[in-house]
Length: 463
Image 1: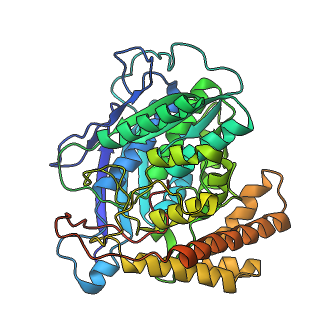
Image 2 (image 1 turned 60 degrees about the horizontal axis):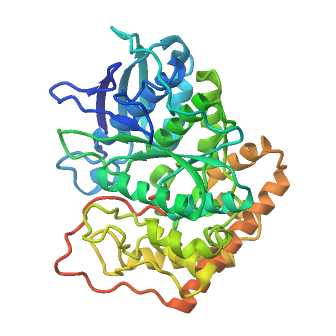
Image 3 (image 1 turned 120 degrees about the horizontal axis):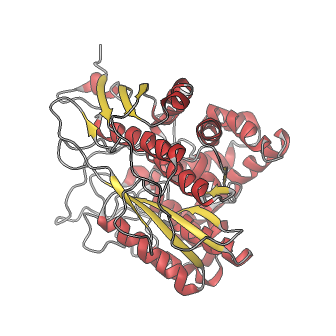
């Protein structure tokens, strides 16, 4: 019988994660242009949002510090090692509020990670300082908060929204390293140079010391939404917006080998439905979660960005392999599923004028498999998608989509029709790209450092 990973973690009021014989790990800090310094990462928030951020960071840290595959695992034991048991104790200022939703939180995290979570809360030994302002000047009425990864969806989506109606945007990012933060900063500056009124807030977080972290990061989306909700609630904004395309959000499995949370569910309707229920019970002011492009393909978002798409694409990074191991941080592998989706979307918008640098060389992580699996998925969607039951066969969790969209005034039948049309259009975009561009995987570069780990997840970068 396979041995399941069992991890126990304790998180103090200061945000440091502790385990027996493990060093403390620094959580991070909030940065915003014009923010009064010095400032702690929780100082700009009220008690309810401080506790939300503590929970989100504690969950994300425990997720990253709990390996799915135990050392020495082989064959079947290794294959069955995906689910974990994680025990987590978090210090909060208002423990009663969170104790009342402990089961609800555990169920949400199970949906995101496939893991069994046991979470409890305790009172701290000390209190944090008084609350400070997030921005030196008030944010204008009607401002729109947008989760901002620095990927193509977030950049093209924000610019498309700006073309629809001029307004102030509060772009909220989460960064785990300096290179990613710098890329996000350049992306924001590019949007500002094009004429968008964007104010940027970034939560910088990292792990310091200890063992190599787990790289599946299934709670990354949970952290991102909690940060967005905390900022939006603090600024008294109406909503938290995600400019993810529908296919990227719903994230259908490429084949039957991908089950449950092995496919990222960061923006899945089932996740958003659970998040809204959790936020409504833990925050004094709980802004709505909105996805303006949930019934749009990535190609349609790119077309909505207009002529500026070429400028945006040069700054936006979508590659699953990240930036840290590349001499040119803006180079894309061209072979991971996020790159293929990006290439097809830009081709659908502007034809052969994609300004992105793609290496197309095989790595230890991506190659022929991704190209073939992505193509086969598009063929299946094109040939075998005529009824709602066809979609549920591919992803049974899509039953949550009807409940999620009902709160937006979209009826069951309309929701089903829109989603069937969406994936039909998605298949057309992918197949048109393959027919015209014939993407291939080139031989490995002899000087390229092999990238280890990671699972083949459709749109795993969640850009």
